[in-house]
Length: 187
Image 1 (cartoon, rainbow, N blue to C red):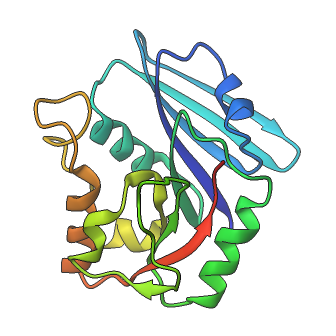
Image 2 (image 1 turned 90 degrees about the vertical axis):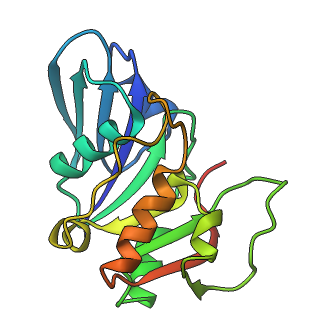
């Protein structure tokens, strides 16, 4: 299984966000800026790509990442997250343990949130507590189910927020298997 991190950001001039985020796997950065461009670099066995676009809106950025991702497993990440060195191992181990999982949401370090201590399947109610930067998914499962982020929701449009809940609801409606694993990936 190949892991790819999907980062949404704005006005990045270079690939330095990859180093700042401590990305040690393949990565696709969707950069909402003032022009259209694609930058690609290879470091070791890992492909670093950045697609710059003039489109605006977090859901549009996430959908562009979905369309252009190549990883078997994808992790949604924001531009202010700093990943632990062993995030790849943690994610891939969770998918090996939950082989039927299409989506696995991980814990983030948020002292105000009461996280369950045990792994569990997610349902409509429990998915309400999940933020987009906790979500990983099997790319083929999401693409085959024709699931996208609702572009009328999220940062950068009039209805800010809620895009990840609709995304997870759509996954549940299509019969995808969603899990929560109480494992931190970011500092």
